[in-house]
Amino acid sequence: MELSSRQEKIVDIVKADGPITGEKIAEQLQLTRATLRPDLSILTMAGFLEARPRVGYFYTGKHDSEALSGKIRRMLVKDYQSLPVVIKENVSVYDAISAMFLEDIGTLFVAGEDGRLAGVVSRKDLLRASIGQQDLNAVPVHIIMTRMPNIAVCRKEDLLIDVANRLIEKEIDGMPVVRDADTGLEVIGRITKTTIARAFAELATVHEI
Image 1: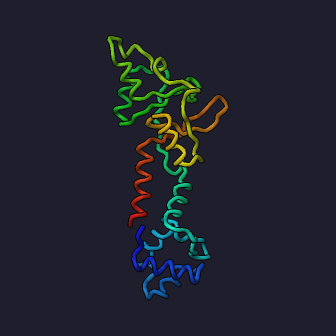
Image 2: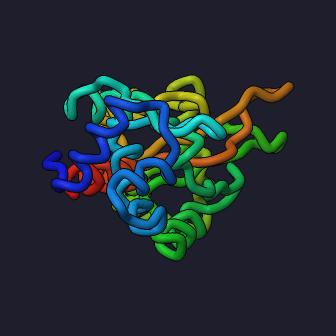
Image 3: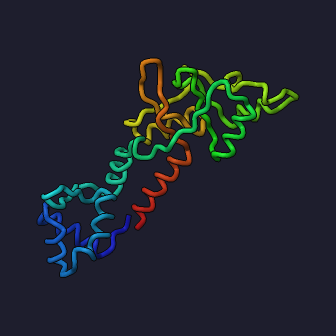
């Protein structure tokens, strides 16, 4: 990340006088606090500075690559998960295909009678089931789904980078975010390759400003 001249001055001030408030930094640069707000946000998000309430800004001592790595290691599933799409295991393959296209997603999570995670259905599963002469309205989705315990799952406190590596390793498009329940695992969210790509793209954009 290449800092602007003003951002470099801010970093130098915080190095010398930190912790220091935004108002004090603005005074030294003879600018308003509002003018500096975007620069302070960028420097904080990029990891050069940290901010503490009622204390001010202080220099982290990290180089750009270290700051980026540290930011990635703080990205948690709970901050990026989206709402899951869950269907019942007795739903037909035809209805599962309809749900997938209506929701514009690549993976459906299947719940058993107790409402807990029972399986996962991917685009490939539905495509495979569609080949042939069978009546898709007569085939329940539990016939073609991947069942527990052969399902990759994650939890909301997991690191996003670890989930990304797991998706690559398993060669799947997404996985459910779950929490432990009395009778099994309850689906509370989903993480997909698209979600992770968007999160890392946004992070890269911050570091290119």
